[in-house]
Image 1 (cartoon, rainbow, N blue to C red):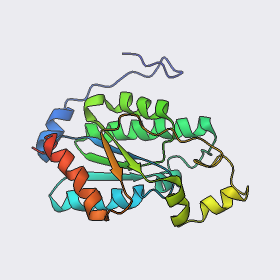
Image 2 (cartoon, rainbow, N blue to C red):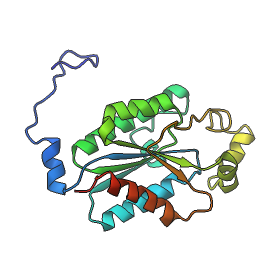
Image 3 (spheres, helix red, strand yellow):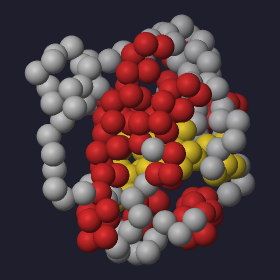
Image 4 (cartoon, rainbow, N blue to C red):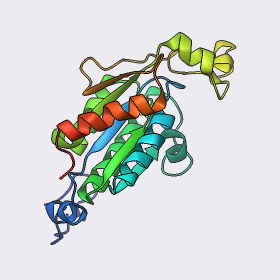
Length: 203
């Protein structure tokens, strides 16, 4: 099959080892657990703790964190709406490959726009995409502000900052809604694990 990517010389290569075989070797159903929410909502902390919990269960995982990815794969991108869209597209393509490899992928990205998250779901596959809304109110995120970003955005030192001068479109029907106020990190992680157990992610 010829791919439309600017070159008629690119042809998909046949690979004999398929996704089912890779997943069977790992004894798990590969999925992407897509954490979305405002800056300082707790996405990275939750993602890290979730991966630790899954590894303790003997699961094969990989964590993609927003800041870390922007230091490498997406370091050429800024924070305009167009660049944010491309950032999410790249992460979704990477997530698709990791799912194909049989891994449980955890992503922690603001991913502010519904259309971009739907694109990610389409790329990765609806049956392998779990949208997790880290539902922390803006005023609480600003109170935490561990990187001092909200203060800089309020002072006009950072442009296109989500929640201040750039919109965040909360998920309308997330697979999991994590309300973080008044809850401990273990409690929040347990909610995700319970969902995975009931959805028979683990075989």
